[in-house]
Length: 233
Length: 120
Image (cartoon, rainbow over all chains, first blue to last red; front, side, top):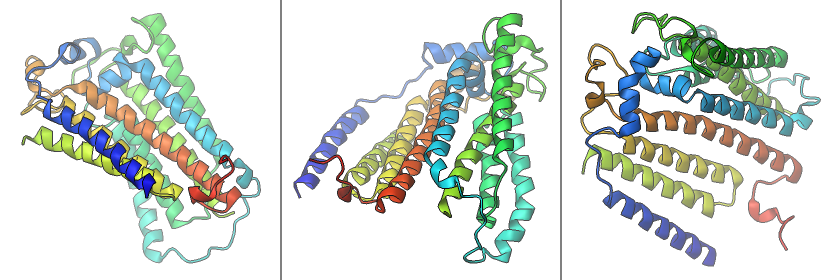
């Protein structure tokens, strides 16, 4: 009972802070200085139509490299933590209950379409809402559907790891190219900026986002397969 | 009550609900769900802060021309921040689930009141 009282008082305090923040908040009428810079300089500097993409891939590209590294670490730690159970996990156990004709047939129809949509989302990251992280998550959802349709299915860990490391390597390589050929690390102007709004524009941004998409998709898939394979031991 | 205030108070309420769930439940899986809800609330608050009334998304095209961009788009920085936060949040959730699985495999329970190894 005392524990619930403490929790309640704590939440009341946090709630009071939030209420104070909420009542003291007044919406800006104009962009602040940094947002103003991004609004006016994005097109001339990077050629990307989606300003959020330009910030993530070019202006703060180094942070995104760190973020992808964090995801890689997560996938590696999940695999490490669950690895003891996976040692004998490759024997395929008989399915306990059938998943149903509807899901199996639907999977065969939907997986290619979902993969295609994921690729569309990360290739068009510089023009439309979307990008490497979203597209990678959509790719991984196709893998999830395949796992749902057949829980005993085993994916090739080596292929997933290879896609992941090759795309990471090329990502860093493009960054170093930017250092050598353009203004700095991960500068997208190593390729021509092209016509504003066309698919092949914004320099290296589409290339980098395709690599991020593949890397994120591979990392999410690796996390899911680790969790799925430990389940049936 | 503007759209922005509604979104922001919803975010704050979600944070409080998530923290309440994480602090009162004893089952680790329910605590993970609580943390995820609190994280979603944080993202909602961040997005609401970057919103400017009556403006468009920060994607330039024929309807949102380059010349008037700084007067017609919302702040793109919180949106980039939240994109990062969602991805990191997913990584944290995956780690929590993996550790929860490991705890269940070694101890046979997910109830934290039964995990007394570090209690004196």
